[in-house]
Image 1: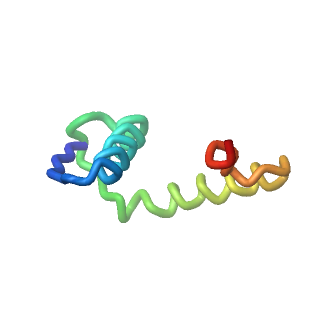
Image 2: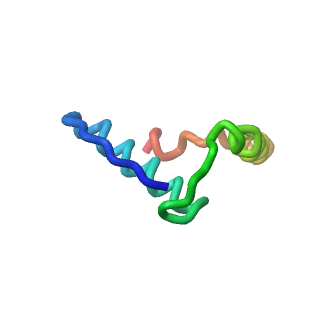
Length: 66
């Protein structure tokens, strides 16, 4: 997966870095991926993680609270 972005806002640059790292954890560099096709599986993983956190009494925002 290849991503080239030109942005001036440091916050947007940080998000871009995090999204790139997230993508590279899932797909190889240069691999062609249809995010539209992948979206149902991504949503299912996110839903399962939210349910797991809720069952554990966590809401996933602990980093923001500290």
